[in-house]
Length: 115
Image 1: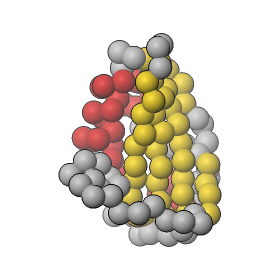
Image 2: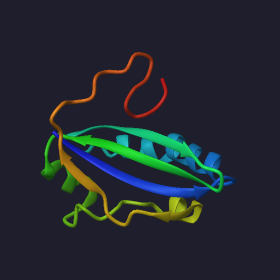
Image 3: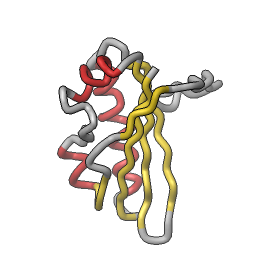
């Protein structure tokens, strides 16, 4: 299993709009792509005084599955134009890790968002 991690930052004002975009449009759009080997996505948020950091964690069966999602240059971040418009800055590349211990199933939540 491969874990893909990416981070982006918004202004405090844009944070709720960005979070809503992720949960209601971007994450469902990723799921609808039905990429073979894609296992889910999780969203983390850390509020600061002047900006809000978001991190996404995605799971894939293999690097080939990551390439099916992100393209041949699989380390490049996949950031749709609507998301870019709300971000003040973001990682241009995603980090990939061989997953040693898979995430446990979460009661009441799915890896792709709230129930």
